[in-house]
Every structure is written in structure tokens, then in C-alpha cells.
Length: 171
Image 1 (cartoon, rainbow, N blue to C red):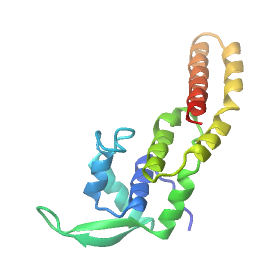
Image 2 (image 1 turned 135 degrees about the vertical axis):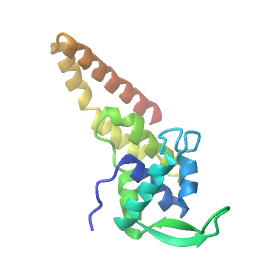
Image 3 (image 1 turned 90 degrees about the horizontal axis):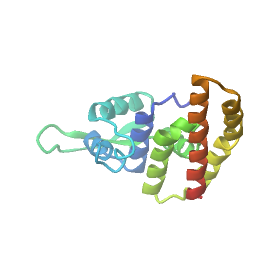
């Protein structure tokens, strides 16, 4: 079974459920604006529940048990299936394809890997290998551009340079 295309919130929910089975409310607490993951990428509670439903339908998450709710019906404890765990392992090691995704997906991956007490050096090196070839191409585009294209090219080039500096600092 191939992994369906998942959104960043779906990857976050899946990874947290792979880390430890939990109910949706507990995942939502981690992805709240002041939560451990939400400080990096906030996922609102309704999106957490929608993601859990989609992941269940995709066979990446299953109901691992139930527990009594504090003020309501029993809550389902969700956990990653074997396919979900495999997908998470592959996703956490895959660098992002664009400089713009460093602020979102890459930082989330660093946070999630840190929660698992996993080394970051492999992902950082892989990410640098993706970004490094872009910088000279962006520098050339910047040198050749005029008008607003020059502004945009400068923005992209400086972001690539900053990304490489950040990755070098992490390494």
C-alpha cells in the first residue's frame, strides 16, 4: 500500500500518534499555539480530528483502545498502524524540497525528531544537500534580473543563503 499524499497537519498528527497512542484532545494540546509542536506549527483542534479521521480511513491510524472521558463519552485512543509507522520513519528522514518549507515542515521535523531523542545530523546533512545547489542558481538569477524580478530574486537568494547558514549552524 502506498502512502497517500498527506498535508503537514496530517503528518504531524500521524507522527505524534506513532510516538505514543493518544486521543485527539491530547494531540490537539500538543499542537495548540502554546503546545510543544504548536509553537512551531499550530494545528487547530478541528483539523487534528479531521486529520485523525483521514489517517484512519487511509489505514495509517487505528483505534488502539478507549478510555473514559472527563465529562463525556469514552474517548478513542488512536495509534499508528505498521504502515503509518513506516510512513513516519520515511517522512522524518526526507528533506524538504524548497527553501520556503524550512520554516514549516523542516522545523516541525526537527521538533518531532528531538521529542524522539533522535539525532538530527542525518536530516540536516540531507537538507543541506538539497539547498546547496540552489544557492548559485539563485545568485545567477539575481544578477540577471531587473525590475521586480530583481527584488524577488534577491529575496529568494538571501533566503537560500540564510538557510545554508542555519543548516551549517545546526551541523
